[in-house]
Amino acid sequence: MNHKKVNLFVVGAMKAGTTSLIEILSNHSEIYVPPIKEPHFFVDTLPKSLYEPSRFFNLDKYFKEEFPKPIHISKIEDISQYKKLYSLSVNEKYWVDASTAYLHAPGVAQKIYSYNEDAKIIILLRDPLKRAFSHYKMDIGLGRINASFNQLMEREIQEYNNGSLEWSSHIGMSLYKSAVENYTSLFKNVLVLRIEDLASRENEELSKISSFLGIKVFETSTIQHKNVAREPKFKKLFYFLKQMGVKDYFSKYLSSNFRHWLFKKATKGSTFKMEITPKNLEKLNAIFIKESKL
Image (cartoon, rainbow, N blue to C red; front, side, top):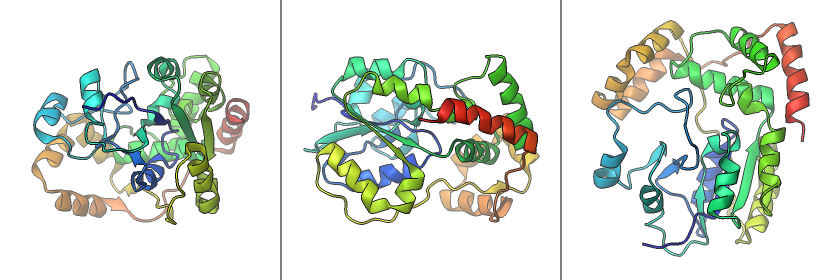
């Protein structure tokens, strides 16, 4: 097995277009993207609010029997498993780890620096309010929460004000300033991008990436929006099924095509509207101006 170290980290923010960017990076001949795109090896504890594997999933079994089956996210603890993720690389210049929780999870920047101080870091950001709302839409669709966006923001604003806001919260993962500084204060090579810029001037932004990495230019490829949220028709039912663990059985026993059909039937294709009071929106914007302006 090759003993080269991972040398490119795309560290988020979550719901800021990282999946779309990784899709582009994976098609470049000089970049190796592993079967698990978000291994989260350098996070001490990944909260259930961000990752709760199916009761039927076993990571050891995956590496013994199912590797290299593609998986979007996991939580790898063992260094030998982390190394195995990159064992199929041939001669790519970069090995990439695109775990989105790396931007905000405590101590991760320091751990990555200890692992490979010469690694290059790409940080992908998004308008903080839009990111928080996208995070909320994802959680509604996954049955993780059963509150309105306004109720959730009101609670998290209170937590922010009293100093108890979790780093993995919807507001917490939209606070960029100190999170970005954790990386720029340690690493020599950090590139900060915004998904809005990638969408509006893709070729220019991709040229920045190729120049930053010292690789040949990317082939023209339109940014595709991945993981687009759909609004459930029955939010309480989605929440109930998640809490009861029924969704795990759906994933295990129903075919992928049938699950996709069922999901489309149970969700709305129309725009998922943001509902928040002007008062709470004003409070949110004040927080984001203070904590997210770089």
